[in-house]
Image (cartoon, rainbow, N blue to C red):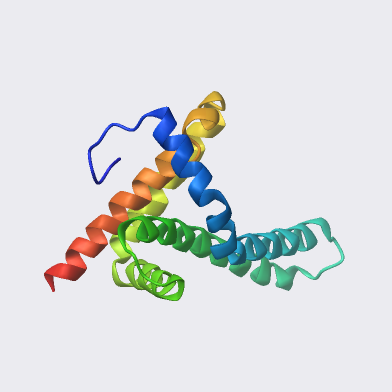
Length: 152
């Protein structure tokens, strides 16, 4: 909707959802696996009191990697909507945009963090905007990055 400025009916949305539901799980299963691995790592590090304190460095580095993976995943989904490439190329383009334009990536991260803070104070908004606002922000960031890339 953002790129094409068109109205989408519920019937058209449901048809598109049905066509792409299974396809998306087949293509993006790695994201689920990585999220589960990070979740298990966080659980182990946070629930274990017998680890020495110097291992908190590993916990902090895992948190930073998780944030980068989350941002990369948001970029990947936006790149998937903008470009028709192979999956590996989409991941590489997303990674390129994440590293090449750090100000855009930082702005995206800050805006998504603000959204999460707003959700903490107004939890009812999660039901309506938990996916759409971060997706809109990452789509705008990817479009800005792709515009800058094509200008070079």
